[in-house]
Length: 237
Ligand SMILES: Cc1cc2nc3c(=O)[nH]c(=O)nc-3n(C[C@H](O)[C@H](O)[C@H](O)COP(=O)(O)O)c2cc1C
Image (cartoon, rainbow, N blue to C red; front, side, top):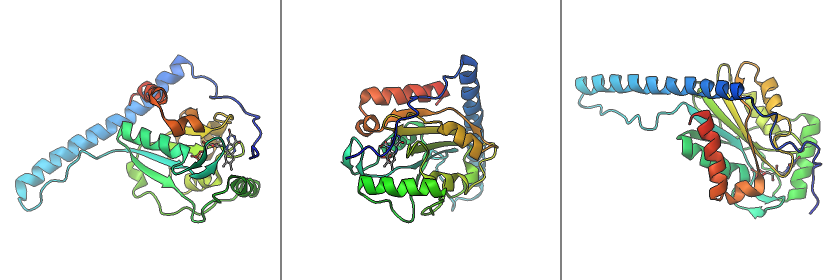
């Protein structure tokens, strides 16, 4: 199997945040999270009222109210360094993050699936990058307006994000939302993608994210879980 990418951007993370930047990022997340708490509290109040006035309409649980979404692109099948996998590397990470923060999730899947064969997928992805393609996505996020924080997950493909991630970013209004990128890769780190997300979403508050090797994400052992947990802790989750 031939490595279909050149490891030109081997930064495992983009410039480390100064303590003040990290504080700012945490404050931005906290600001949005406290919004959910107050929304939930007011939902609780209105439910109490409706319960008082209508015995036939039992209140819905607010336990699962969340203003956090984990949206991710991830491809299973044959991939570099992991063989043929049933669940993509980024998806494993995405599911863990969603579970840890109690978020909803959305899998960015293209209408036309990518080839299961690794080399064929590399060829398709290379052509899409050259064409600046915007592949169509299956389904959509219901009520994107209700999310204040969006974790955006993706693999590095040819030193960039899969083109479907651009389709996704261009499909919604992300103004004033906090965007938290995370990605998997096999050597390229984040490959400058945080800057690309910032350019694509100029009205959002795009934080610097977390990059994890795909093979490591696929195994998701306790050490890796701790790495992710610490990152989430640092953001105030
Ligand atoms: C089409 C394609 C292009 C890739 N290009 C790169 C790359 O430029 N740099 C890199 O580090 N890894 C590259 N990889 C490896 C993936 O980033 C890595 O396997 C990732 O964990 C896959 O995530 P997924 O299973 O969630 O799709 C590429 C993989 C594919 C299939």
